[in-house]
Length: 222
Image (cartoon, rainbow, N blue to C red; front, side, top):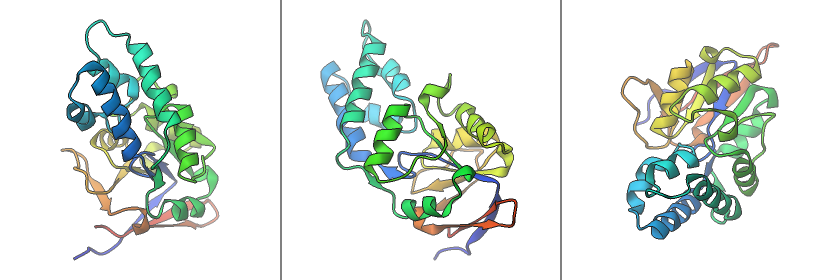
C-alpha cells in the first residue's frame, strides 16, 4: 500500500541524469562490457560500482597496470557519446521538466558535457541553463561539489533545494551538500541519508507557489 503523498517546498530542483531523468542502461552495459573484454576484466564487478561515478574514476580503478588511463577514458567516453540506441526518458521525466521554470532546476551529472548533451538529446529532454558535469568538478559523486556548484549557479541555498538521484553515490553527494533528497527507483539508501522514494517521475508533481517562484513538490512515495 502506498503511503500518503508528501509535499515539499523547494527553491529549486537539482536533478541527476542517468537513471533519474533517462534510462541509459543498455548503452552503459555495452560500453563497460567492451572495456572489460579488451582488458580481460570482470564486467560485472565494473558495472556494480560504475553507476553514478565519473568515467575517468571507474577507468582508473579497473584499468590494468601500465594502461594509459587518459586514453582509455577518452575511448570509453567516445563510445558512450556515439552509441545512443536504447536511451529513453524515465517515465514522467518529459512532463516534470515541462512543468519547471528553466531557472528553477539544474542538471547535475557524472557524465561529461558532450555525453550529457548527447544523452539528453537522444531521450528528447531539454538541457536547462545550469548544467554541472564531470568537466566542472575536481571530484565526482559522492563528493558534494557538483550539487554545491549547481545551487550556487542557480543562486539558491543548497539546504533549500531538492535533489533527485538514483544511486548511493548521488544520494551521498546531495546529502553532503545539505540538500533534501528523493530516490528515484528501487535502489538502496545509504546509511545516514534520509530520502523520500518514488517509483519514477510520474509520482512527482511540481507547481510554482507564489510570486517568488518557490516550488511545491508533491511526491507519491512508493
